[in-house]
Amino acid sequence: MTDADRFSAWREKLWSAAVSGDEYAATDAALAALDQDLSLESLLLEVVAPVQARVGREWESNRITVAQEHTATAVNERVLAALARHPSARAAASGPTAGRIAVACIDGEWHAMPARILSEVLRLRGWQVDYLGAQMPTPQLISHLHRTACDVVALSSSIPTRLPTAHAAITACQATGTPVMVGGAAFGPDGRYARLLGADAWAPHGRAAADRLAAGPLPRPPAARLAVDDLPHLEDQEYTLVSRSARSLVREVMAGLEARIPAMADYTPRQRRHTAEDVAHIVDFLTAALYVNDPELFGRFLAWTAGVLSARGVPAVSLLPALEILGGRLEDFPRASALIVHGRDTVRAASPEISTVPVRGKST
Image (cartoon, rainbow, N blue to C red; front, side):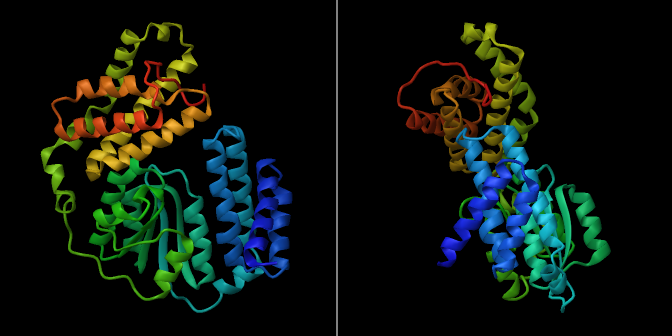
């Protein structure tokens, strides 16, 4: 049996246990894999991480419920906790130290599993790891760096709407003289936003991050700088003005939808809440795209949302009325207007039959 076949077999065992909520079976499967000569690092990166990624994909495709998604994630977290106490993990922690690293999620980032897996891999590689978990406020992160003098910081984020916060965290860490490595889907499929925001390194996955750190120290960070030094387009103030008006924009779009679509009068409170959440997500991703000046960020979000809605029986074109109303509210903002045009084109490409179906919540 090839390594790929072995990994696939163990993934199926862990997946079945996780999605059914059986943490004992999941832990037993993980420990059995170690007993059959699968290395702990391979187990983390080739089995646990792909299973957790599958959790997200299955929810997106509407093949598991939100409750199952949360259950499977909780089971995988218990598996990680068990593996962290395994004798092989303890033995690695007692060896020579490669350096000290702080691993944290950007403030507002709840998806901590990738950062947790990276932490365990780095411990196996001999690093002293300060795992700071999800939603790490930047001021407390900086205080930790001053107190501990870590050699490097690894920051994780999966959601592009956290990019402005990530930028502030990167520059703040670098101002202490600490180089920053970043990873996670928020930084783009090829790490383009990591480079744009001035991170000292980017890694697409845990093994690449560990290998880069093993290859030698990261370069010393540049001198302290402002956001506009990295992103000169911010001088036009569009990002600032749109982000500050985000709540009022959501209210205005909701009012516009209600005036345009009489059927919304019969929405249940749950449907109305989910519609408002959808509109808020559109505004949030629009402001993130304004921050990095990238229409593709907004387009990728809308394409993803169209897929999620379609999987739940809601036409993708239901996004168009909200985009049209939002475009009318932001017609005096050239970059925002261009982003919305790109977004409408993306939605039309995802669903060629144009209609005026109301925006509905992802869980309706």
